[in-house]
Picture 1: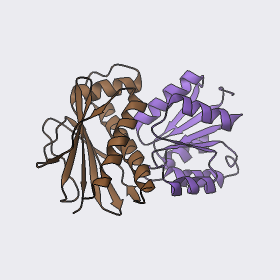
Picture 2: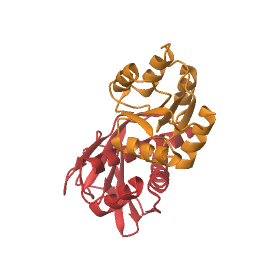
Picture 3: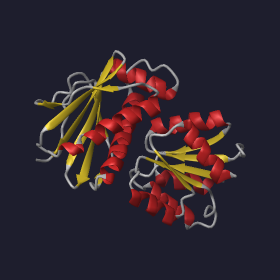
Picture 4: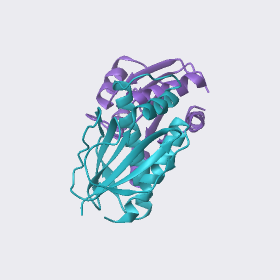
Length: 153
Length: 124
């Protein structure tokens, strides 16, 4: 997989979370993920087509996403529910859009599908291709979330 | 800026409608309507007199661009200000929206200030 595809997603994730949820996020070191078990409790997945086909996912630990959405709405969110799932879908959509904008500047044009969201402990993340899954952990205070970028070989 | 006008917010994500409503209320708007896609928006426009449309682009059933084209083709709403608020930020998207008659364009993610500045421009 072209490593130039990765950085725009890291930049987009930081930008979206900092702008919409007013939090400071720190990216950890990317690594190759071997299994399909989500690192978080709620995951947004979006398909991309263009110069390469693939998917990105954004998976949040419960406390992390509750804090993030509470900031976005300006009110305390207490539990994982349809409102949280909807917010994860929109965050995934925005991360995809921002990353595609940066990729376009590198001459790589992608289109995106409408995101889907999966919720639950130890759920699986289905990427649409069998390419390598590059995972990037992010830290928000005590909270943690992870994005996965997976493009065809 | 006249904040007594009626505003229709169109987005398939309830999250984004909620964020936009919060921002508009902070600015002073009170007459806020919602629709979750372009088709539903047209139904609202059929029965309501709306002064400003704020719409997402990428939605099921009918996209924001299709909604914009329908609105511009109608006698009733062809001059109604239309703000596109979308994650679609590629050059071709902006060109298509301008050609279809969009009043202004905001790329997600956005700040409340960015929304306020765009509204000042299109409602002055």
